[in-house]
Image 1 (cartoon, rainbow, N blue to C red):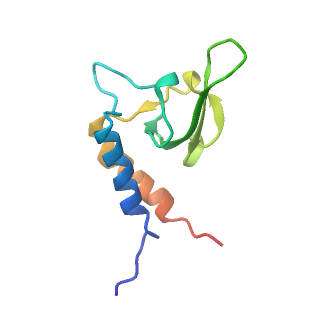
Image 2: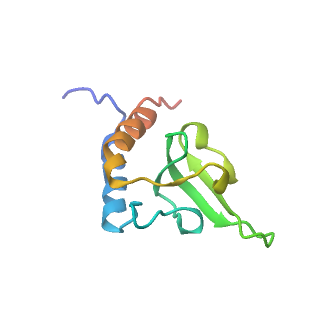
Length: 112
């Protein structure tokens, strides 16, 4: 049996992208999914072109209506008000690039 080179991340990422399609979670020219519309497990991109995976999205409860977001992956893996970072779900055309990025990110992880 050949050794698995990506620790099993590929089918998980494929399932996340299929979920995006089945639930119509991709942004498009007519609708950008951002802010309070983001859901856990959405694949997102920020204004710098970095991909991420939403871990937690909720409205901050101080009355100002800001949405706070926790993303897994790379530089957007912190909690912040997402309006400053231009975070939205990916376009369907960004799916292949997002898949490659996420498979590399998660596939390269070696857990202790």
